[in-house]
Length: 360
Image 1 (tube, rainbow, N blue to C red):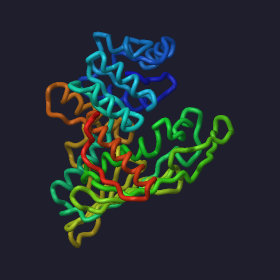
Image 2 (image 1 turned 90 degrees about the vertical axis):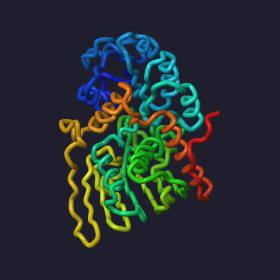
Image 3 (image 1 turned 30 degrees about the horizontal axis):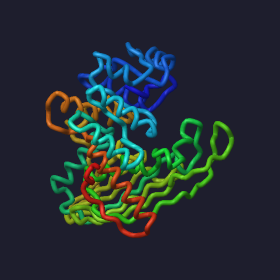
Image 4 (image 1 turned 180 degrees about the vertical axis):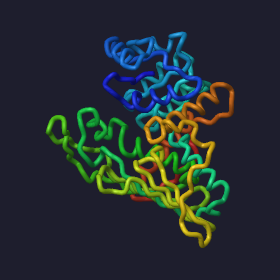
């Protein structure tokens, strides 16, 4: 794993517990930017090997999968180096800083086993929602609307999160949170085929609580997207920046025969969800998760819950089973959707969203 920090990181509280819970995995090596920090991480988490570069880690005979879980601006270079080893690579989402970088990584990964960290579609409740729709619970989907809130965009930041406010880094509310959100949304329903969008920076100056100084924000903290799904349904997603009083997640799906309401305690569908529904004239009632969906109940409610299920499907695929986990081409498709949303917001006109463009 690249990105496991002794001082805490997404790798430490998302990936590490997931790897320890998922069948067939053990964490055998860690790499960071220096020998000292790598050794500190190895000692903190009981990892047997520490390396000062991803090249050394990838060459290690006891490494069978390289996981890149660092800041987005570093993804391209690290993934290219990992691919040079010929070993499977999992890169966290966003895959890259924009479409051009994503296209480059797709080219470089041709023929390799590669995965992108869209763990939301592995989450038990999201898989159950997909099955409810596929089994006709709501009939034909007529319309759907999703409202969600996520920080730190729009609210205070610290030294470790201040970089998220700079749009040029590619780690924004649109690329990270909306990307995860729309991937799960599309997994349950269908893909957008055309979009209209409004984005805005409504908090251009926010407080850095570590320094007491203000930080200039260029990444949008309000994103409103509407459009048409491939099956003709009318859809909207409004993702808002940090607000302690706002609804964290509310998603309604209206169909010809039924209705679903999904409520969550975080800005993406990887977080715990409550699902209620009704068919015909029924009263709304809770639809609890059936048995067989959750393979890691001990992790329920933690950030590692969906990630552990993501590792489950990666293992199945690496052992020769059916393709289940999103790959780099899938990630490119999502990058292209985000690009279409940005173009729609800038131009004020509706933009088409097709299949992934030919990788040049």
